[in-house]
Amino acid sequence: MRYKHIFGPVPSRRLGLSLGVDLVCHKTCTLDCIYCECGPTTNLTHERREYVPFDEVKAELAHYFKNHPDPDYVTFSGSGEPTLSPDIGRVIAFIKEKKAKIRVAVLTNATLLSDPAVRKDLSRADLVMPSLDAVTPGTFKKINRPAGQIDIHNVIDGLNAFADSFQGELWLEVFILPGINDAKTELETLGKIIRDINPARVQLNTLDRPGAVTGLKPASKQDLDRVARIIDAANMEIIARVKDLASGDHISDDKMEAMVMETIHRRPCTVDDLAGALNLEKEKLEILIKQLILENKVESVLQERGMFYQTIKDPRG
Image (cartoon, rainbow, N blue to C red; front, side):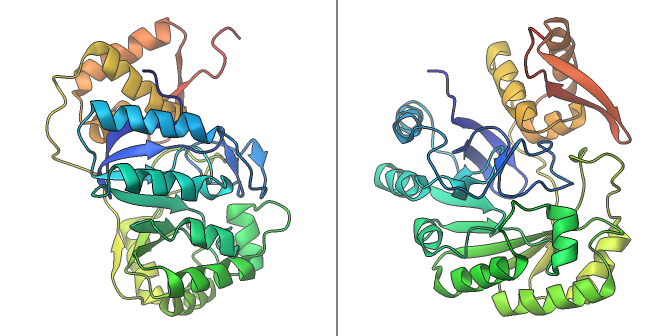
């Protein structure tokens, strides 16, 4: 069975072996973040509706569970904002019905947590990982570029309401871009709000691959250490990449191609990125990438950190 709405499982730098579930069409989101590694948002919206059929997602998960070993997590993520789907609660319930021991994680930008229906949908997840990159209207618009009616104060209120009611773990991610959201006053206000939310973890992140806007610079380790000191929240960490997972050398060529295509369709990667994320030999990946370029399935883009590879959206041009 060829899956359209689930992908992986792939080694995640935070969750171990993670099976992804994508409940929206490519680049459908409430935000158009300038740093997004999946590229610019093409459908900027805050409308909750069925973007992909619930029955198709359920059928793919049922097939996967029947034919593969259990992953560490089933993670709602992908190429857009998963809470835009009103079916996310039903899908979580289906996973818990079929595989109660598998943990469920949701990566969200937190913009819809002000909606009680969204908070209820996420209530059975084991781990919710919202992001909060800015807490003042000007910085929020500059870095996250929200859909029309989304207000940062409502986002913060929604995060607080969710944190008060959620029985699972809450890990809050903050994405730092020097010169954009790292002013001392912004970070001091952010720190106060984070301490009020009181997440189990606070994870500082920065640019690792090309963002939606060119010319962005990643924060250095010194930058992130400074941010951590100013925010001054408990359980703060600078998140790292997955390393030292079991070898993937036994994977067939067809499976390797599928894994690579699924990964770079969602975000451009270097060969080193792919080797680390998929735990595959760099030499084999280089040969595969060359073949995919010859077949007009993949294109290369030179960026400051190296050569990145991404899918060609319409190979027939």
